[in-house]
Amino acid sequence: METATKHNHIGRKISRIRELRGMKQEALAAEMGISQQSISHIEKSEFVEDEKLERIAKALGVTKEGIENFSEEAVFNIISNTFHNTSSDNSTLIASSLNYQPSFNTVDKIVELYERLVEAEKEKVKYLEELLKRK
Image (cartoon, rainbow, N blue to C red):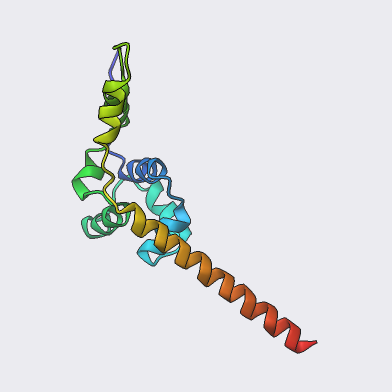
């Protein structure tokens, strides 16, 4: 039996990292200033240009090398090793949870989301006011 070699499908890796970060294609597209369809096309591509990969990595909050070397097995091993607790108390779980440090500032992300929501509501109000003026 022959062992099949896995290709380094960068698009799939980008897709999985995006999903693990809880990000939709639309959000990544907005962050990069391109269309959602472009992100979909990139995620179907086996290869991505270095410059574009750098931009994607920055938008995802990871390094280019992080995308290139991404492995789901490694992610699951890290999660398993981090949160595996064989002791009778929860000290290991608590300690490993406290050592988790996201690569982005959560407060900044919350503020950014809030600002987008406020802007969307302002646009709705403006649109509704225009509709009322026409009547």
